[in-house]
Image (cartoon, rainbow, N blue to C red):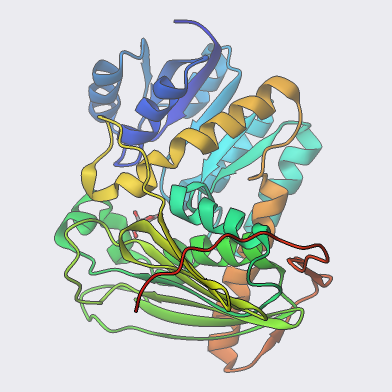
Length: 364
Ligand code: 89Y
């Protein structure tokens, strides 16, 4: 196999899926892997056939001739490793959320710009099959301009999640960082840049360090969007919980509900379609919808590396999401609405022309 040569920094839970996703996409070659605990790096190298192992990231950058580096570590090491990639002028992909504070995230973007290297963020929720399909359905214009929306992620926080990502329990800033970063990114993806937000968050469980429930209300142009997150919901789901979305437009509603069904309702009737993610043998079935989204995001990164045309998830773009995450904490702390300095860029879903919506009427 040959292609763009890359190194992986970090061999925790996500690397076990992100590396096979690269193999699935093809056109790339993992040549080195780093982990602080070298034995873990050796295990991953063996499992995924990666020739060289390092316990010192600096040495890795000095020795390897890389087309890019994929940082799959936890939050505290994102910034130092991105700065290191910039020092060695190696294009970099970094796991979300970028940084524990907004200033560091800003610095990551500027340092990469100054070094002249591409900096991309592995924000994969907007690449999930049903969430991507919802964007397309919005663009079809059936429901007209959105006026109210809700993006919801509930999470039973089953033991397997703690076991896979033990650091989550220790984060003083938890739900908004870990999942708020995804949902606020989805809000921007669907509806554009917000002008203000208000947030409340709570800690329900007492065996963790940070908040495990949060709601953020965003004002985006003439609409409002709520992002709701809970890590303490008791659910009946056997699979990893999905993201649900409800959008009310001037002419109808769109709902993405359980089991990947999207329902579009207007005066003309209701259409119900299922948008299930593909299944890959290397995915953990509990996380299938998330793991499968790594294919399209990696394809987009690869296209960007090859053509020089930026992908969707650039550091600059993700900084706007990080601004919302940190503004949400600020809002909850001050119990105040935060006005954002973003310009008003609501997305326009109004169509002047006739749309043949061809909805199928579902009997009540
Ligand atoms: O870390 C989180 C993420 O990004 O998606 C789900 C998760 O693994 C646990 O909440």
